[in-house]
Image (tube, rainbow, N blue to C red; front, top):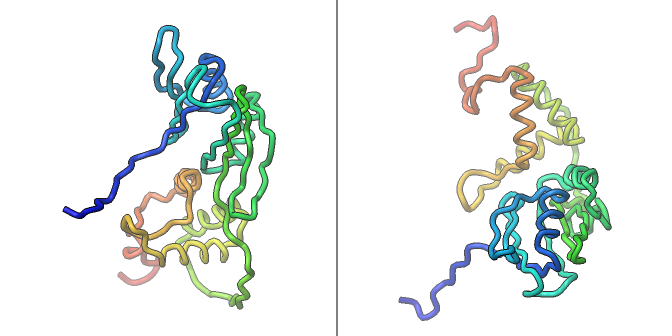
Length: 216
């Protein structure tokens, strides 16, 4: 057995001091779109909430002080910001693109804790000069329609969208397969576009494509 075996760690769960447990649960579930997981005590003074895969513990009157800072990554911080603002959350900063490659908002809760919600943004510096050339090609009609709609949603040209997908597909990831530029929200939108354009074939179908009128 090695002298210094590798230590395995599963996750990190912050514990936040709260002045009032019920108030904290209410704010996070009603204004920040978390879900309540469980509570402990009678009346409850300790418990947990969750947003996606992120869990936070609350402890009434202990285990910390007001004014802690956390950072949570979401799919689309602009959409999240709009939704929680409508619910009355206190957004004190952003959305703003930060130089370290994250678009962020800062949200303050009743205990003066601040959560930095954000999503990664592409690094655009330093500039990389390239020469773009016209590319004459043909593509399955429904798939071409989906690509055009996806490019509009991403605020990119069709060519830029293809460049992004191609370059990602060339990169292997440690867990297997290749990298993808699509977030969970983008993938959900792509499923909607597949229905819109009537795409009922799978990712291997291109090998079976033949143009109408071609000889079998």
